[in-house]
Image (cartoon, rainbow, N blue to C red; front, side):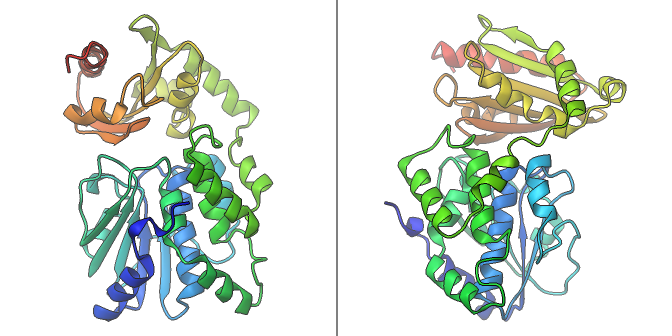
Length: 342
């Protein structure tokens, strides 16, 4: 069993706060946060809140948080992470974010007295005053192994609601693991061990699993319209959907509607790679790529285009007036990678 992942978070955090005479830490994730970003940010916030009550902790997430995780976050009894902090001096911890360009509340990172980065993407830029990156399926799993849960439980036992307050640190870390592993479809032995231990600490498994399926009937109908636009290439092994601003308005879809489509396509038995291209503003395309990491490493696929992530999931935000050309370049790189010529 892997423990602490060779990173002393408590020591690093205490040094950051004490050596820079800080009393506030802000915790950030990436734009359009998913379950792993939300779980990592909120789990770490609750851990620090319990173990270090002398410090003010302020997690910040975007309103564009995925619908399922947002249900859990909206029930939080301690934090209000959709309000951007306004402080004088602070340290910052960035979770699950490979590049500076993707940080939500980037100015909070840039104006921090000290910055710590905790990530799991192979494409991490190595930014921040202290950057600790370990490639894994979920950033939340890395965070689980680097925290001192005995200290957290001792702190919880002294509080007015000992470990009965939900959602708490264990719930959120469990949430992040569940979402980024596809309900444990992509999991190592260490992932299962972390999940077992979190369950023993009271993580609300059934409630958290509900966040995996938060669609309404109207959501499903919009999703069906998106699937009508799917096209296939490369012996039908690659499936994608592209929607521009006009289609977005006509269909009434949002990024939340299209974001899961790449994973749904990838999970089809006869498809190896699924991706989506969404024009979030005129000429700016947000693209999401999903594979099993073996047929094509999508982190490597995205490298020449300025995107990245990890082997099975990667993203790209690109300004272009010719999305067809960009898509064709991506498809051609897939062909070259499959042929061993890239």
